[in-house]
Length: 393
Image: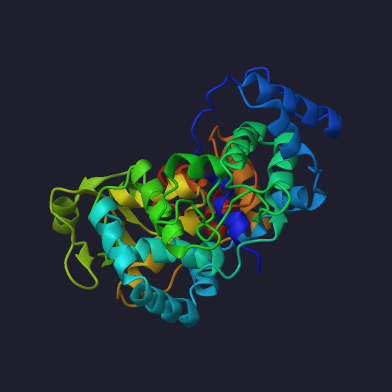
């Protein structure tokens, strides 16, 4: 399953050094490439290097098809996590933790990023480097830049790849990766490689495809750059009381850990985080499903990927790789199908809510809108949309 490309498409990217206010998209592909070449020269790149870099570029219609067909995120957390977290991935994670123990020790010392977190990204993005994608990276980036859906996201990556080419670290004819342009074992975009790439094995190059130390060190550096708080927790499973104030749950609401404890929230295993640390109670499938207390570092996962179901799965997998037990699924209320979710989103929009698009995906904005409507209708406001809510709307 070529899943990694669907995972990392929504990375948080920095602004380019040259304004793109006049950037265009669409139209003739050849004309679009000519425009890219002209902009590259205007940015100060050597014209000969620019000509060589773009010499064989072509449009890839399969990239556009993949971009329009990311249905995997329609699954709920329980279904999604069970499909992605296998015993193989857990066992392989432990093997890689032992194999690269010195690298992880250095990462902990330099960046304060837990090995479980990096192992989780490594596992979910590429199955520990085994499935890195076979799309020509330059073709993918230029195709997505030409497409008018999100050109501002991908156009800067083309020029970042050109810089890597000039440094001898990007072969436009042979560099391959995910359909959305990510490269290597932890799937980083060219701009992220430029800003956060680390030569972890000391060979003088950042080779994210072939060097696990380079990939892991670079991933850790990127997480730190995105705001990772060294040596702090990110998530733990908790047991919640039936009388928890549901409107105060969800990522939009935070309390000190001590305040959650006073309301009856308990760690399922071990102890809660520091009493003064802010945290949110996350109920991925509602108040009757598994419950997690998530800390500030959990939010950094969203800078790697914007999908709530992916972020929750990755964060949970990281806890498993560090010894946490499988979560208790409990008995969640039935959810909605993809078609029902779209109908729900349409009704939420009609009531003035911003759900981020009618896509059938239960993202953060849809969850926030659901919670507000549950509260208005006198339903338990746990952000989990049910057939009853849909009918009431």
